[in-house]
Image 1 (cartoon, rainbow, N blue to C red):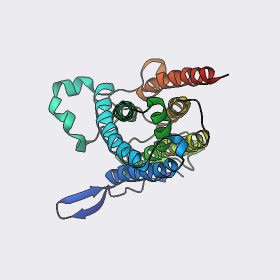
Image 2: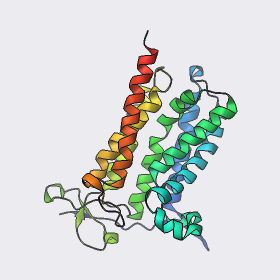
Image 3: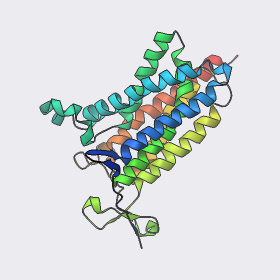
Image 4: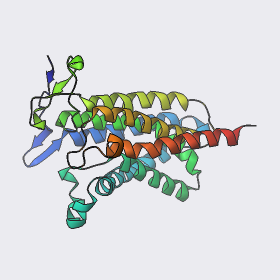
Length: 265
């Protein structure tokens, strides 16, 4: 028999009119892990980053994630709606964040940080990207707690771990796609990047591996995720998330080859 989503209360702590939601706490967990792991790696002098750099990168990163994630959702998913309701772009408490947009936002702020500090953008990116996946993993746990972004209907063969999401308005067993993305884009990608970056690589190689790895794992995970109702499947029966991942895969693969070729003796 399939499982049933536990229907967690999305509010973790309520103090009078103040409500702290689990999803917001997951963002804090992601930022805290970034700070902890970043400071750990900053101890290795060859990486060219100090503890103070990590603190500042966190500040820049928060801006990149929130602004990029929101603008990415507006531009990639509902441009027509927000063109007619521009003030709702700022209503982030209503939901609507795009991880691809968040990644673009982080790239922009990394470039800005590197320019202001006189550092190599590629080296900054190589330092930052292994710290990102666990934050993505925390966000997916927040999605699961909220019972949102549920998966596609599941074949009876996978019912032992399929789940009914009452929020979907039906009793159809579905893939728990939030947990798939937690495991793939979060935990697995973290392990790959952390191990890949343990020794010095050509500048830009680790950042390229992130683009290739995230794009590939997100593309795979999307097969289990229900497409957005207002978009459905697009050309070739691929979701918007998959179409946004394809350029990441291509760019990451080409850059990874280029940076290793350029560094070869």
